[in-house]
Amino acid sequence: MSDDDPTAAPAGVPAELGATYRPAERYGFLQASSARLRYACWNVPGTASGKVKGTVVLLGGRAEFIEKYATEVVGELLGRGYCVYALDWRGQGLSDRLLADRGKGHIDNFSTYMADLQLFLDKVVAPTAPRPILALCHSMGAHIMMRVLAENGPGPISAGVLCSPMTALKREAMLRSVLMLMPELPAIDERYLFGTGPFVVFAREFGSNIVTHDERRYRFTDKWFAADPRLALGGPTLGWGRQAARSMTAAVAPGYLERIELPLVLISAGEDALIDSHSHSAVVARLKHGDHVTVAGAKHEVMMETDALRGLFWEAFDRLAKGVLGQ
Image (cartoon, rainbow, N blue to C red; front, side, top):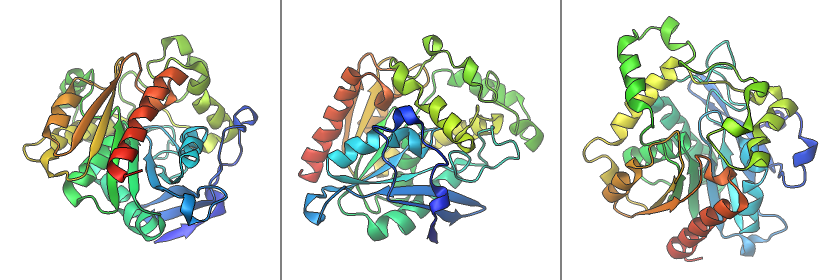
């Protein structure tokens, strides 16, 4: 089902990011239903197996891509002794896009994302990843992982850290009101969601951004899109918004979260303007083995924040690794 393929590597690397960027040892495509999914795998450098503590499955959020995390986060995980396995969601990164307009972030149903993740875990991660395996997921990726754990069980995953998980949106009531008025037709659902559009680098003013206080890390996206334009992605479609709303409803259905057996740490961003982080405490309360950490002062992308705020994230990650995995 998986096929290693060097063409899944990025076409170029921004020179100014080269010092911390870690290219993967293995890139490949995984054939899923109606789409090829791109993945990357890193081994702990210069090791015999004795230095390997385990593996981290790294999953980004909507519009993100493997290289954004390979710029710093992957190196920090490798330095801690973890192999890393990462996936581009269908419709973004170098995975197949769903619409002729590559700039539109679209999905037919979040169950498709869930099936893609399960396939990745079954066919790429489980056969080769050193144990134990820890999930590290952001935003939409955290939401999808949580749903897969609830519906399919833990599989090869031993524990997880979910950063800014998409459990509720700040402007969700407005989104749902608009969706109720819009007929569910391809011609409608394939339009950009109101207030969004194609990626325009000149429109990305740091001062008005809502994801990080750190301008250098904010520019990771711009620099990678310039180095390999195939990575570029604009806003979500109305159909993506419709399916996201339905998936968030499904994720909080009675008895749903209670199915998750493994330990999870939910990390909330104290200044999140995208996700309603007030919903996280209720989610954690329903988990059998849940912990809740709030990084006060952080915007949505905690792993792309300032050094001080990222330090609080890494403390939470290291605490889970030590406490749950015995390391």
